[in-house]
Image (tube, rainbow, N blue to C red):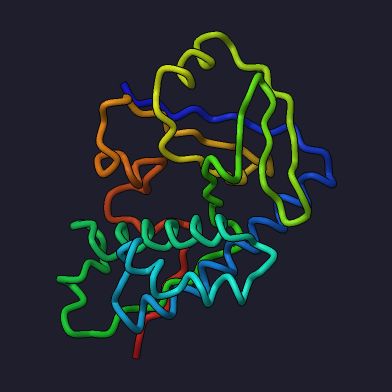
Length: 204
């Protein structure tokens, strides 16, 4: 059975500032990529990677290669929700021949991690930031530990809650589940809704 585990981070003010800087940098990456999606109508993750990776690495050297890949994944995932979900007001069929709108990502957008940018071992969490690794000691109960060992980790997302607390969400899926079945499954918006961290500039 799939599970989403949410773990709040007990950050110091300095750590919260570092995570906020990472979140803002990730949003800048996504916003640098969004005009390319608008002009090419390409948001397939692999195709978008081939189109944009090299330029983004040169433009944002501090973000690192893997965070660039994660931003490409984030934009691809968001575009699938906005332009392909049948209930979306911006579904391709509803847009018709009109140009794609430009999606703009707020500084509050979620940050996607992967096994290269975040690790969890023996209760210690280590995660990428713009100025080095940040580490937290986590106290996980036995059931949660067992899930991490028994299931496959599909998505890791950092977000900031309404109360200002940073939280990591882990999507764990059954080992036999195909990647395509789970990709993009973490914390989807309500059907037909545009994610709250995305602003839409309608093309003229």
